[in-house]
Image 1 (cartoon, rainbow, N blue to C red):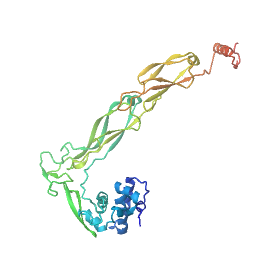
Image 2: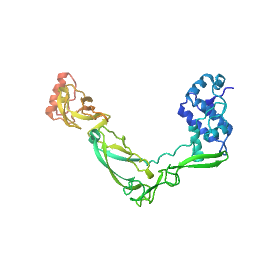
Image 3: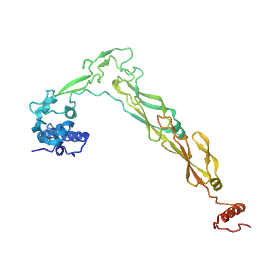
Image 4: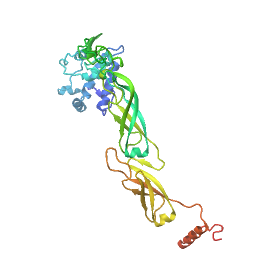
Length: 377
């Protein structure tokens, strides 16, 4: 009878490889035979399903023919728990059935359960990342700037230069791991002996040990101190964007790799301007005669005062463009535009002469207006 491997793993037929892998790992942990509530038969079933739909070529064949594809020379039967354990110990492939378990995934599960697993080497020590916030003015964000950042962080020890030994003393090969930095451990379980690798506890994976530990960092190679870094902020940066400085985070002990520094930008508000990407916006007020007859006005930009021509007949709310007066694109040279929204002001108070002129203009246009009290008196 054909099996529905997607149903076994609890995923849809359209599931991505990552979704299938995630489902397999979750179920493998749940039904692992070494657990008190484990289920060997269920584990074998989900493993069989994953070996098919977790493989691109086999998955295509399964989608076309179903699990009965073994009749076409395909998948083969499921692997026993002894088979899986045999391969986990490096015993080679499974006999007869032609089934192969991806020990990259199974090995990770063994590692999490038994504390080692898969025969994989220890990852290098990595220092923690640091994030700091930096405030910029509007112009600094547009044109870029160089600023200092002060950090009190774990850094490479100056006394021993990060080597961990007192200056002038010898560094010797670690006798525990013979300079390999890795020691093998054997754990006995109900399923047999499991071999794993871990960082050497004496040299912390370095492979050598100082004759006398550094008095400043006690042999770790790391000491906390104030550090000043110059950070170059690129032109065109915006709020909430971050700059990554690789290796400028916290130093890692025992010769590991330092973390990264992230400088998160906050651009201060500017009452004169607003910005959206490369475009800068501002507003300008003009009078009705200026709007009707046209004029030239001075506009404040990030480059200074620039003259803007307002064409005759401009309506309130019209947007006029100053080309190339906006912000640059990060990593580029071209600049955006500065857009000016023109607002036509309606005067709230008029003297008698102004009222008379406007009334005459209204009569000329045939428009009805309120004369008001004392218009001509």
